[in-house]
Amino acid sequence: MNKQESRELTAEQINTLDNWVDTISYTVMVLLEGGEVKEAFCFYREKVSGNDKQIDT
Image 1 (cartoon, one colour):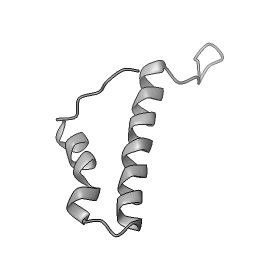
Image 2 (cartoon, rainbow, N blue to C red; image 1 turned 135 degrees about the vertical axis):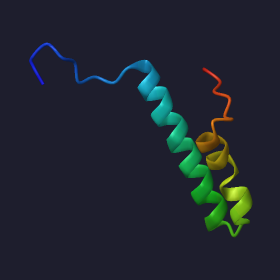
Image 3 (spheres, one colour; image 1 turned 45 degrees about the vertical axis):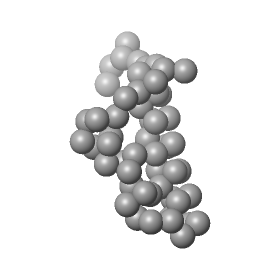
Image 4 (cartoon, one colour; image 1 turned 90 degrees about the horizontal axis):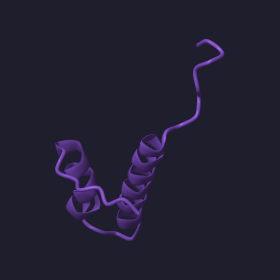
């Protein structure tokens, strides 16, 4: 990487990371509270299937 290339994340990359952290947090919370596996992974399945609708905040 040369000196002129930026190592900063773009707003889109930050938004993507934020969405994944939210998805993982939800999954872990549901599983720790004894929820169903199907419910815990519902948002994950939507993301990997490409059916998620991102809402910009």
